[in-house]
Length: 185
Ligand SMILES: Cc1cn([C@H]2C[C@H](O)[C@@H](COP(=O)(O)OP(=O)(O)O[C@H]3O[C@@H](C)C(=O)[C@@H](O)[C@H]3O)O2)c(=O)[nH]c1=O
Image (cartoon, rainbow, N blue to C red):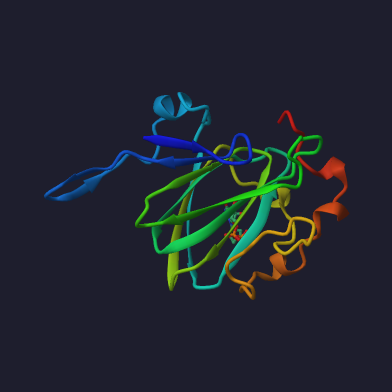
């Protein structure tokens, strides 16, 4: 597999090795030993699947306490996937990085614990899959506004469809730093 660093240390783009043959193809989506060689260490304790139509934006989400690392990929369609460093005291606090993930490119994106995450669907539909390093905890689920002007994320869809929760998410500057993940988490 090929692992490429992004402009945010810790956020990695993974191109798994794909074994094609007359039947189709085979690829590993997770292998604890192999991914650990590239610094991706987690207990993959939960796996999630969501389906969304074109223009749906889910995010920017994070969990505190018990931040989740996420290994994300797209099984059908295409998304523009974004990670934002919201770890207080991080040298890259407030910066974002993005990856185009699709069924065609079969890329994975590793978003370490402590980053906010979101994506927008750029195909007709997208089937989005991710492993998580900690279990979902509803009351700990938190968000940052997808269009926070301080983040200035260059979303490819300018008027996305949002959940009611995501429509009222605060700007990063309005969140008490004590309610943000710690850099060393
Ligand atoms: C995320 C999640 C949601 N749910 C429930 C809560 C709610 O009733 C319903 C839909 O939840 P949400 O609206 O939060 O789903 P969604 O907007 O898809 O949330 C996800 O967005 C992406 C960007 C992420 O990074 C994920 O970690 C997660 O936050 O599913 C679970 O039961 N387990 C889970 O792990």
